Length: 147
Image (tube, rainbow, N blue to C red; front, side, top):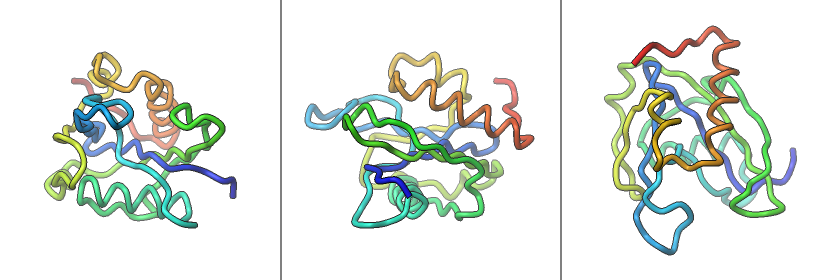
């Protein structure tokens, strides 16, 4: 396993992307911007453990390792010289009722991917990463429904 700084999850719930509006504080990267669940690695945890823990902390939803359909290691432009793992999962729409906002972020929303791509508050360098994840999900037969 490669060394990594953190992990992110493109989580579709009922064909919508689970996204969090980051806190609006000047001491964090990308304040007041739309982000995906995930975050920094703790100790020697695996990429899967990292992303599943962070998702549960941020959205209170339990995603199982078996739900992780896609994974990719990418350079982390937030921390030059490091890499992060990206994952994708798709859950049925009724699982949205399990979500509650954790201690980080202003709010969460399930957004159609086209809305996320078009939103000026979406973290810009995450857009190609979302495209990679959506393409991978489509190869697994998971389609995004129209707005």
